[in-house]
Image 1 (cartoon, rainbow, N blue to C red):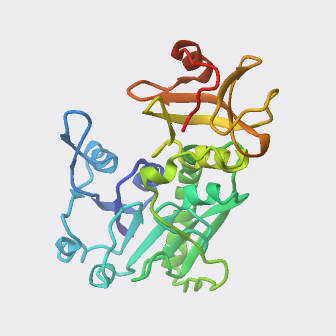
Image 2 (image 1 turned 180 degrees about the horizontal axis):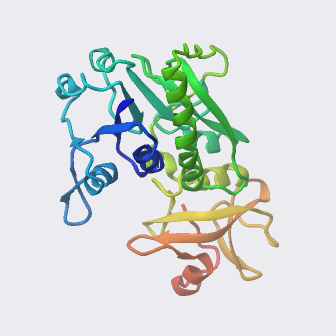
Image 3 (image 1 turned 90 degrees about the vertical axis):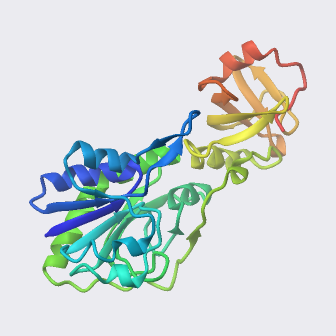
Length: 304
């Protein structure tokens, strides 16, 4: 098939790499326009745009979906992977076989922008990857392929998403075969529908009055982005690796203590979060004990 890929984040790279040697023709990559980034706010190309340039694949960076109306008529199919733009039916209908999407959940669970984070926040043991035909709804189209993936008990969203991305080539390959054979995809079930709304920075703020289990999920769900955070002496501080624990001595919610060589922070019901790694404002990630030893934490001080 003559294919296009509409994608923006690094999670698309394993599938893009596979397509180059797949026997299909990768005719075009579509990604979001360059945006200012970093302290200097210099214009920066998306990771996918950089990949396309390095591999000699023509790349489009439309400012709006309508800019694609005259650019897709020669394609059999477009694969979207975290493109980040809602496409109208006038665009979806242009390629011979339309558009398919590689989505990082076991649909119909966790339709929307942040399926991996929401699966971890919800305490799910199983998630998945799905390839479905795009329609006008939000991740509502009929499914070609779906694979279940177990969520590790200490796995962060970043780690899980990378594992899921590595499954991308396998499920996309199967979907392309089914499309070529004329298979009609399966309509999504009306049962088990849930929605994964976009995560904002304020959603990631830690409430130390919650249970250690809930906070553990929050830390894992928001690592690496946007980062679960709290305030320390008025400055934001990110918690990047932690797990539930029972402290040797009782701690109030948010209270910081070094016990038996490990950093504990009190939370609900006499529980604590044992913090392994954190990142203070303006600094790199470090071991929690290293931070504690340099921060001169006073007895009874709190994260808030």
